Amino acid sequence: MAFSRLNALASPLDEQQLVNLQAALADLSAQQVAWVSGYLAGLGAAGAPVAEPEKVRTRGLTILYGSQTGNACSVADSLGEKARNRGLDARVVSMSQFEPRNLAKERRLLIVVSTQGEGEPPESALDLHDFLSTKRAPRLNDLRYAVLGLGDSSYEHFCRAAADFDQRLASLGAERLAPLQCCDVVYEADANAWSAKVLDKVGEITTERRAEVVTLPGVRRAAASKCDKDTPCRAALLENRRITTDDAVADVRHIVLGIDPETLTFKPGDSLGVRFRNDPVLIEAILEATGAHACESVALNGEEMELRQALSERLELARLHPAVAKAWAGRVGARDLGELAEDSSRLRLYVAERQLIDLLADFPGRVDAASLAALLHPLQPRLYSIASSQAEIEDEVHLVVSKVSYQAHGRDHTGAASGYLTERLAEDDRVDVYVVESSAFRLPEDGDAPMILIGAGTGVAPYRAFLQHRAANGDTGRSWLIFGNRHFQRDFLYQRDWQAHRKAGLLDRVSLAFSRDGVGPRYVQHRLREQAAEIYRWIEDGAHIYVCGSTAMGQAVQAALLDLVARAGGLDREAAAELVENLRRNGRYQRDLY
Picture 1 (cartoon, rainbow, N blue to C red):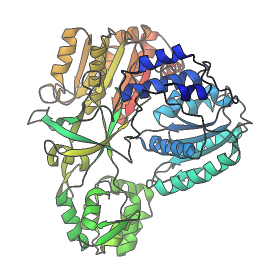
Picture 2 (cartoon, rainbow, N blue to C red):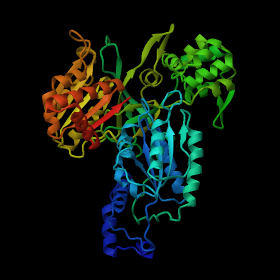
Picture 3 (cartoon, rainbow, N blue to C red):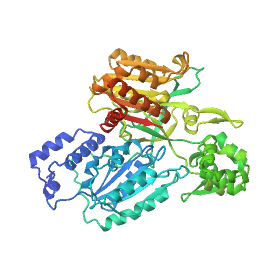
Picture 4 (tube, rainbow, N blue to C red):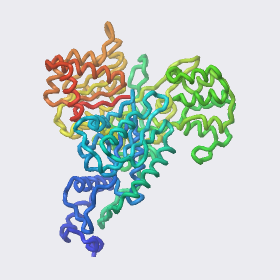
């Protein structure tokens, strides 16, 4: 009979229940079946009764990640897959989705975390990081753990967030499975070696078996394909439209990519990773400056290709790293550059203002193809906040891309990815993309909750997705957009969208700050202070506050928010800071800064 396999596995469901279940699932798509599978798995993990007659299983291996650009997430996902391939019961969880108090229930824990700014953890890791530093943190004598950090050794606080987690867990009584592993910008080899070592250790202390997977007859299984940094999806350029005026300082484009919604899904707040090709004109300039032969074969991670292809698709040319400048100094014997490289602060300032071609012009030298390829770092995808919701348009993803274009050091410079998307990618051309989840930048679960949306320039992108999503779902929560840019007439991004949402009653208020209009610059933080009383009333009414834009803008908004809470709420600085921190802990104050 149709259910013989299930009966052989001693299913706790009777035949009629199985018939009902099969009927309920029969019309679902592969994507919907995958969602239901995850939902049911979540119920089981949360304590719903799950039949497992052979034995009662205990919690397996937990892999927590804190990611800002998606690299830590990618490493954690790969680590989880490797663990499951070894038969380990592994779950991969963002720190933003993990309840810190549940740490006491864990027995085997692996942490992958990046470091940003002045040695700080990413936004998604703040709650767990702060919790471990309080008196509420429990003793963890039964926990075995290991920590891997991603960072940049050219900065003073290299992998500090990872070191904080490692040291704090040890101080709470947990036992290391392996020493702290700090990975630099080129992290793949070190991360893979660490993964193999810690999984060997986990395997030695684990006796659990992997959970059995039962396939219901007649149910369409989701495809095994995945879309991530290592295996991106293909998207086609459908639209490239300028949304600033021709005389605006910034050339900002509305980019529309056509996607397959069965393989690439995203939520409002997520970012899109874009793999791009370097500018052919820049490649020719580098070949001429170094004397390297474009057709000569080079090896990258065991793969042979011509140097020209490597420079186009695999090697970083626009972002100049201090390690590259140091290596070039040793290669060409440039004394001045060698002295500069001895001062890390001066070297960081030098490379921050230059691309590789500028370094080659300042300190000329000749190298062969293999030496040039070995000198450079791998080409990293660029991330863009997604400006659309699949609840409204499921087979497209919209981006807001500001084309980087400037003159410096006697030559024109163009942004690597922005130039590719806005200039070199033709209609219907294909580009490799993947989604970077932003679990710490999410719409309120309650569609009726009010929102205050603060952004400058292209930082307005996720709010377009937020309001599209709410409109498609029929949500009624109030929204207040506080937006800043240079000029009202030239740089008011998506003005018609906001007007449409205002007319539909979804966007209640709009406060604008155009810094080059009027006397003296006005920024979003000024609007916050001017509207302090009303903003505080929205906060008292349960509003969620979102901030998206540059780190400098985010810091200015933070200071203004503390000021307005203290003034409008009649609080001292300490009480105001505690109120804002509570908003953050409760998911009502979320930031996406870059």
